[in-house]
Image (cartoon, rainbow, N blue to C red):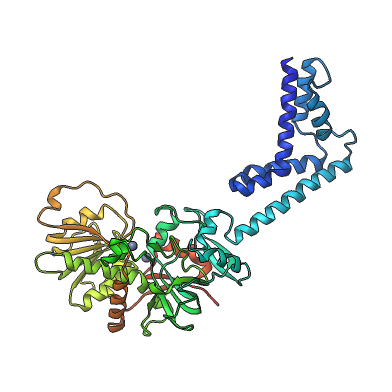
Amino acid sequence: MPYRLLADATVLLHMAFVAFVVLGGLLVFRWPKLAWIHLPAAAWGAWVECAGIVCPLTPLENWFRARGGQAAYTTDFIEHYLMPVLYPATLSRELQWALGGIVLLVNAGVYFVLLRRRARGLATPAGRAANGDGDPGTVARRRKRGHNPLMRAMLLDSPGRPLRLADIPRPTPGAGELLLQVKACAVCRTDLHVVDGELPDPPLPLIPGHEIVGVVVEAGPDATRFAPGTRVGVPWLGWTCGTCRLCLAGAENLCAAARFTGYTRNGGYAEYTVADQRYCFALPDSYDDEHAAPLLCAGLIGHRAYRMASEHAFGGGVARLGLYGFGAAAHLLAQVAASEGRSVYAFTRPDDTPAQAHARGLGAVWAGGSDHAPPEPLDAAILFAPVGALVPAALRVVRPGGVVVCAGIHMSDIPAFPYSLLWQERVVRSVANLTREDGEAFLEHAARTPLRVDVVPYRLEDANAALDDLREGRVQGAAVLVPQP
Ligand SMILES: [Zn+2]
Ligand SMILES: [Zn+2]
C-alpha cells in the first residue's frame, strides 16, 4: 500500500514538474530570480522530448508500482486525468518532437518579452518608479515615453554588479523640468558608494551620475529659466521640499525629503537626462564641457567643506589646511585655498608618490602619506578619503581649536580614540550634500579664479572601467564620461 501511495505521489510530482516546465515562465514575470531554476528545467524538458529519452521519474514510478504488487494506479483522478496526459497512448516520436517544440516556443516567447522589458528598464515596479518621479505627471509621461526615441544609458540593476549598457527610451521633461543632452558627466566617489551598495535603497534600475554638463534640448511646461540650447550643470541635489523647517532655514542640503541626482533620481551616465530647472546651475564659459563637469561635485562639495572649516576653526582662522585623499575634490580645493593665501598640506595613500607630486604641482607646500605627520600643526583638515581611521589621525595633527571636516557621504567606522585628541576645543564635523547657494558661490569663484581641472576622459560605455580606476586610486584628478553623439 505505501508503495502505491509513493507511486501516486511520484506521478503528481512528475505532473507538477511538467506544468512548471511549460508554464513556469509566467511565474518568472513575478519572481525574476526563478529563471535560474526554470531555464534549466525547461531545457531538460525540451531535451527529454526531443531526444526521445525517458524521464528518470518514470522508472521510479514503475519501481514503486512493482513493489506495490500491481500495475494499476489507485485513484481515479490519477488514472483518468493525469496518466493520459503524461503518457498518451499514442505517444510517438513525432508527438514527442511536437511536445518538445511547444516547450521551446512557449518559453522562447516568455523570455523574449521578459528580456525586452528588462532592456527598457521596466522589469520591476521599482524600475518603473525610477523612471518617473512619482509626481502626478509621471503616468502620462510614461505612456508618452513608449514613443520616445531611444538613448544609450549605463544602468545599475543591482548593487555590487557592474553597470549594464542599454538602449532605453529618452525621458520626457515634466512641469518645471528640462530635457538635457549630456555632454559630460564626471565620476564621483559617491557613485562608487551607490554602485557598491554602501548607500541604502536606490530605486532600481538606476542611472548613476551627478556631475552633469548638458545642453537644454526641450523644456517641459513652465520651464522657462533656461532656453533650449543653453548649457547648464546638474549637481547631486536634485529636488527639495522647500517647506520643511530645514529648507526654510537655508539648510536645504539636510531636507529629509530631498532627492539626489544619480541616486534617488536618474543621473547622467546616459545620452540624455531630465533635471528640475530650479536645481540647475549656469556654468562659466571659461570651462569646456569635460572640464566643467568635475566642478559640479568635486568642486562645490569641496568648497562647502572648506567654508565649514573656515567657519568652525577657533582662534585665528585657517592658514594651514590639510587635505586627506588627493583626488578630484582635493585637486580643485588645493588651488582655491592656495589662491587665497593658505598653505595646503596634502595627505595621500602611503607611498602614492604620483599623487604627492600631483599635489605639489597644484600648489601644496607639503605632500606625504597619511601615516606621516606634517612639519607644523594644522588649523584644519578636510577628509575626502572614506577611511574612518583618518579621523583620529587628522585630530592628532590639528592644533587646539582646529577642525576636522569629513566631506564624504560614506566612511568606514571610526576607531575609538582617546579623548585627549578631541580635548582643547577641537571639532569634528561632517558635510552633507550642498545647497544651491554653495553652488552659486563656488561657480562664481571658479569663473573669477581659473582652476586647472585635470580630467581623464572615458566613453560612456566604459563607465565600469572609470569606476574601477577610481576605486583603485588610478585616476589623477577627475574621471569624466563623455557620451559620443
Ligand atoms: Zn559627488
Ligand atoms: Zn525640505
